[in-house]
Image (cartoon, rainbow, N blue to C red; front, side, top):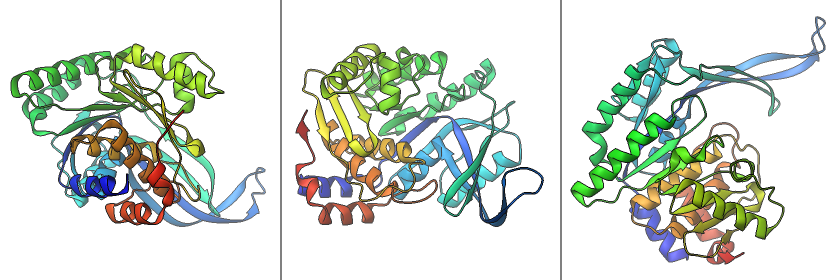
Length: 340
């Protein structure tokens, strides 16, 4: 597997990915704690650093750039300071901003206060209702003009209201039309939230985590057989070609139509923070599929990327040099796949 994955890591460079979905600004306040407040039994955080980072679908895009690909983000931001800050962060990456639609909602912001490496509290500022028809129409217009330019599409669903049935129906219908007219296969990979998996019917692959797979299938997964049954049910519900269940320290499990369930052991050496790990997984998956890899090869690449990113604190990314370093230093990669 090593030589094939090394070649795949080289091939993903320059692939162009469309990221459609929920856009978030991740706001980190870093500090130290030395005392408890006299006003209430809570720690007093002495702030030492403050960061604004790309989150949600924007962090997926960041991972794509870090891995050597290019991407365009299509989603909703507010006409506000955080929206402008996000546009500035995209411009620093060299990413286009013409797929961003300014809606009436504010830009979604997650503020995390971290002291001594531990998250103390998180504040969410968000609006999660479905977008207006005018906003959906603006997104549709962008997709109509640009869809054929992309090698793969990522749907990043953070359950903020953007990835609803109207948008998914429109997106998948247009992908099918582009494929029919051009003969070009455009994989659509989805990082879903559990509600209504039928929204994604006709996508190429979905990537629920263990808990999401349980909720979407209605099956408590405590054994390999229950995992296989749940994944098979998700295949039927979503109409996808494959399901990749991410399972934390247990690695991943891939089920393709007509094939056996395959286990992919984790390559992580240490886990410090899982923030954004799903974004890394789906970015690597999409780039692999865009480079004409099989689902198994793309999943193995995503597994290595996830193993790197969970060893970092905060909303992190991974680059190709890190992947190659792990690939050449981790003997477990050679036997990454085994039938469950």
